[in-house]
Image 1 (tube, rainbow over the protein chains, first blue to last red):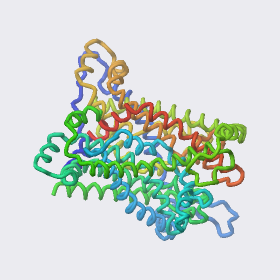
Image 2 (image 1 turned 120 degrees about the horizontal axis):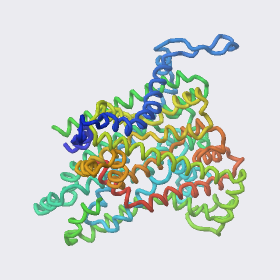
Image 3 (image 1 turned 180 degrees about the vertical axis):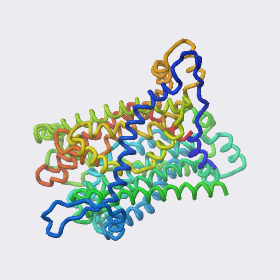
Image 4 (image 1 turned 180 degrees about the horizontal axis):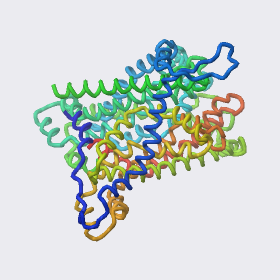
Length: 318
Length: 291
């Protein structure tokens, strides 16, 4: 049930403070909230709501070019045109499949690593907890693009220290093969975010009451059993939350493959991820098509997140 | 703060852990640390090597010392454009995170502490916005900004950066937790205005949370690559991430060792900020995200 409490605890508002002296010439009670929330609300409308509306509306228009390409392209209302085109676009559909595969593999691997590290640091056998926690968190402070740049040197055939170490053993990892490049990207993402997720799970572990753990120990439960039967169920909520944020992160995949693209020797095409694909459509001057791709991606991400919340919530109840 | 929660456990004697389990746990943790530090170590070593030797050897140990020469070359490239990029990054992130934190603090505090029509709707949309991939806003924003001629101005990067739904969410949670209603009521009885109560009482009580929000937003803006890459074509306005990726993609025009040394310099401010403010963000992450 922790999963649900964590998520729903955000919903109910706390007791509101009544204004004093109401009706005695005091300013109307809506004035302060309006002044305080106003600036944020206006910018939120302009920077979040307006772009969504803009994208949704423009995705309904198709760009038509005349046969000879002499006249400028015109936009015609064709509500399904871009969507039909996107779903029939092999490169775009492939990019969706690619990030789906990425999410299905990378997210569980990263979260199992994060959970394992959090449990290790939380275990009574751990020494130097602060140091290990800090080392794990350090990559989060490295900007995603910088991390990708550094890893691109780890992968590059000319400089790769990894392959340099493996060479005497007669081994070498082809980081930029068609089959491996997705996992080279996955490694960068895992490196960047494992420590961040670990800290969140570790924070949740810290709030398990000591008496509960002590009682389990008195009953003779082993450390592994306590981890499996008490600690992991107790941090369910944190795991679900990190999972949802990681799924959203997978859908946004853009920085890492973009940085690797110029040195990948063609293994990273310009439509490697859905965002890159939409970006390519913009570069080609077809914004409505890019908007349709974005809408499809947003709907898919929303559906997956929702399904994930529902599934994990239901299982928690059972 | 986790230290507070962790205390009772630490007081108990360290028994029931065998040398074997301690060794296994330490070994596994050391292995993970090796993975996390490996690329950073390589970066540090390579940046200190004499110019041009970056790709010789296995890259895992120092080989001569050329850090200062490298920095001088970095400075010389393109009339010192690199430092311009660093300055741009710091300005965008500093201003964006500062304004964003103030906006988030005000909105979150108000949602937590005032009853008003539309409160539920506002908070609901904020939560929904947290769950939409942020990159998706970039393309339409780019077109909207082109329509009103904001392309190639710092405003185009700053405006989207100051809106942080996650910040509002965090500050609402923190305000509810750490600002007692009695304090607000006492302030009112003393005749303080609503804004004064926020500024002098609430902000102080929410400070660890606000530092966390500031840091997270600073990182988010520093990390955002697509938005500045699209809206800033003029390289004198670009942040360091966009500049470095440009250098990296230029292959021959800019020597790759400069990208290495530039990458090292570009991560220093964030690392420094995180290490210096550790106490705050730890408190923020522990208490805030999961209550």
